[in-house]
Image (cartoon, rainbow, N blue to C red; front, side, top):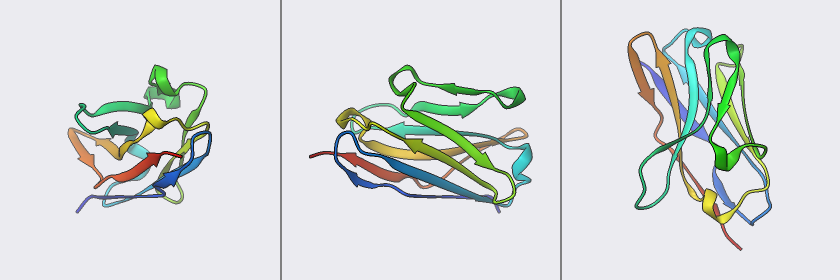
Length: 115
């Protein structure tokens, strides 16, 4: 059974930082293409950051230069370091794994940026 467990969300002031973690089980992690998405209230889920083929990374324009996606295959974990957070970054953040022909999602973790 595939499970993705996110952690690290919370309330942070504008300009602050958070690091999200997503621990995977039930898959051969090094073969999974990992990504982070987010969904704000009343909006569609959108891609935030992802690993592409060959290990390169892609970022949504609003987070370029502020967010960094990374992974530790030994720990079967993908991270999202978020710096210089803005109120518009407030959303539920979801971990995503593409593994073979399948697509898996975590339960999400809330990030709220507010003073």
